[in-house]
Length: 290
Image (tube, rainbow, N blue to C red):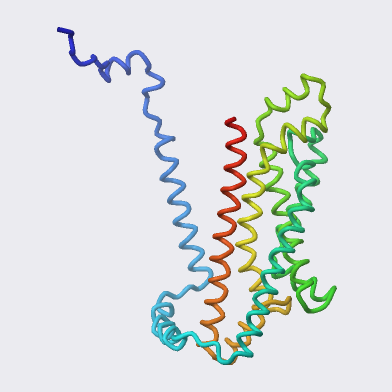
């Protein structure tokens, strides 16, 4: 019979004698998470006190919030003419979202390479370009909408430009980070067989980052549907203007119907983008595995 005796484990005391530095308890490592949590808690308390947040008003307003929710039921579209008008406005919002997001992605794609550490070695150039991208994405989409409305006037074109400008900086940052995480072994392999820098980027980096970029763009198409609704309130076209109008006139049943239309549109976009995302990533994975 074979000996099935349990494996002898070293005693903790023996481990401490063999590795005193590794087994020594570090009070700094133990205190750091507590210090960070305490600092965040203190910052939150100071923030609530500074902004004059009143929890009594919040609790008192829950009843009014419940009354408004009841007034929103059941959702009502009013008339066929309003339904057609809102459907057209929702289509306009989706068009603003699609055009603004795709335009920002196409414009930011080359700038992502120029801002990547493993493509452009000059840190001064990269630093300047990254700060420029920060300037674009540091301004909210709503502010860009107000700016473009004064430049090109009211309408969906201002909404497209607002989304494009805001997402240009965001995509530039995200694309550059995706490029910097690309595996350098494929680039070195292409250069080892005589490929130049352009070949290394085209065949070594681009195939690695395409699934990531597609996933990011599809997510922002879904997210920008909500942003396009908000900028429509200030006159940048779309369903947002009609939503604000119904809220101002206290037509809560119409408000709930418009919100339901927006939710259904976002859900449909999410389902379509999920299928496209898995199709692209799955195809890339199968190709890599083969």
